[in-house]
Image (cartoon, rainbow, N blue to C red; front, top):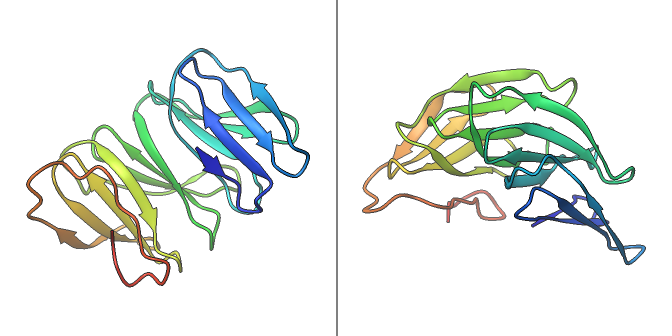
Length: 178
């Protein structure tokens, strides 16, 4: 599930790759048909209200919720995306991959700002700090890495988890990770 930043849209991914879009203001819904690949993650892009999706095969694309159309294919299969996060301060989208790579994409033209491999196993969750200066990545390698979003460099690694870390999120004030 994903809520749009303006509160108008709710999106849910179905097992067959379709995306159900609810217009919460109009109290209506519609279904965007896709290629049939299951979607592993979806997030609304701040500023444009477009919905960014990544499939289980790693295809990254954009859905326009107003037109109910799939408008772009953004990423080739050289990196298999697993999870997404959106930065509310810049509109940037972070992509975590099965190989432990993190990519930060500019929403204007979908160019890559930086790419880093802070993990030795797949990334399960990503979260931006409220001010957008840090990106936390959780991984199957049992670590959480905090990266500087301007430089793409790790600034801290949290070790010692007994099991894989499946979820990470910043507190509302950005002072804690949960």
